[in-house]
Length: 405
Image (cartoon, rainbow, N blue to C red; front, side, top):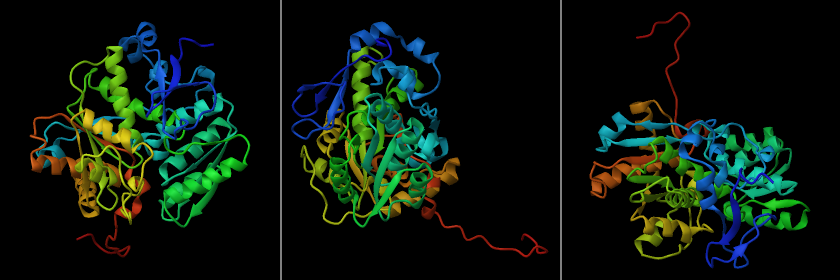
């Protein structure tokens, strides 16, 4: 055993805190709640220092003591992690937030933060003997898991709604995944996948929060933000929220780092950002509820956050309540305007979900929830290149012998 590589100890039910074996393939707890990976953090603290981590290669695997893969030989990687934390002086100045930073996940393999969850989830699935991963997706996660499954040498079965981004479809096809389009929403795709997995040997349902390790890959965003700021927390982190894994994961990372003694002081306020056409978390937060209710007719251009009812909705709300955060919904028009303005201001073309966070930051500054002195980190979860339809380009065409005016 490579005891020093991972300090993974067990899995814990997120609702009832019952303990479960981490070394067999697991789905949800017996009550249907997500299982969370737990570590021997005392041993991790004795095994590695922050200075030693700083000397490691710049991938998310630099935090391997608090990741679930036990044997380094089972790590499936394409160099994911350590994405830039970019200051946004011009955009921040315009929004009244001079200390605005962008964590830019558009630079990871497959172009979206989903690669983090795929890298860790696929590595652990392969380590535990899974023959193929299966999942419903709004696009980006399926593309990432398909590519990492190919890298691991295992199969991938992907189902996505018909109107998921075209490019993610092609990413699945080019990497050899078995792909189906569903005339419906992600929940409909989920039912088809669950049925197929029940009939196929060696397939694991890796739907959002139905396996424990995607969240572990995503939590490394939290570790990186802290490390990139010199092992301290920003004041506020805004995160686009669909299935909610990212915000749950960052909250988990912050709690682990506090326990490890790597972070001190108050937690950053976590802000869940949704699109007005599909905002169950915002509705629940506004009503002071611990769970969400699915909206009747969910629609938004920020396709990645069109999730009517998230399995981990109660964990998202806990993260927001516990850190004194909030939940905000922005309209399609607001987020598209933010996407274009940010690219003009800073030269970075981010995805609509990330743009929703920039728009939400501006809205929170206007309302006074942010006073402008805060260090605010906005998560951009993918590159704008995956969403070419959000920008129209109709430049004038000149004759070969013509003149530029």
